[in-house]
Image (cartoon, rainbow, N blue to C red; front, side, top):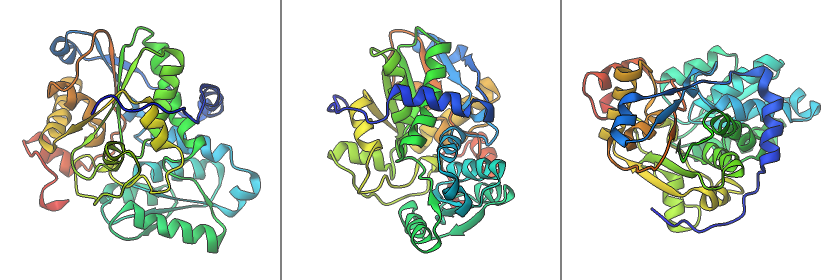
Length: 335
């Protein structure tokens, strides 16, 4: 997919800078490391942004923390609620516990058991609803209307997008000559935030969204020109599942305006990315975090200068990870 039409962004670089100052005491500024094998393959330096080293194992802590810290006291007193494919729920549970706030996380049956357990371990109330994130969102709407909880959306929210965008600020500062940023694409909060930050500082940088070729709602929506529903399917990149909402307010327009391309990966390509991360960098990452590596290995990326690859999360089920390391190219019957 190329030549996506341009529209104005709605979260600003100044909002992202304010988010960076706000959340700095609450999370880690993750490092970047060069990947010699990928660099040789692509012919330019390839740097990995090790966001899977966050306290909750994923970038989602940035957006959830920023959103929580911008809520008024009366909202925090009532508690917060969200829907998630796993990592955002874990991040919100972590941030809420740190602030002494009640958290309710609504999940579909497709969310892996290890991610559900991690959310419960952080003290959040877990509600399993339906077979898709869209169905879990219905429970969020009910909890807001009937229980008075404050919603912290997983992606389509200005404070969440600004928080995720702080990752882009770090990339631009640590790698000032970056020419291409590879970002996992799901609901679009990470992609929108990172693209706003990077392009706000370096307008010539290309930002490419990467996702699986099965059940990828944002990719399908961008191809159609408007938000659409897709059937969710089990994937190694489970964290990239879920819909974007037919009434999407922010991330669809921002991704349409800011992404230079969207690349789709097969399950076998995602598995190869996971194996590369483990064998070459000793990084244990989930499939959704491996898509940047996968795209380079599959020959789907070209670049004229340094490339930044975001490893967005490491909250993979370890039994699944072991199967992939041993050669499995799909989630298999235990999905």
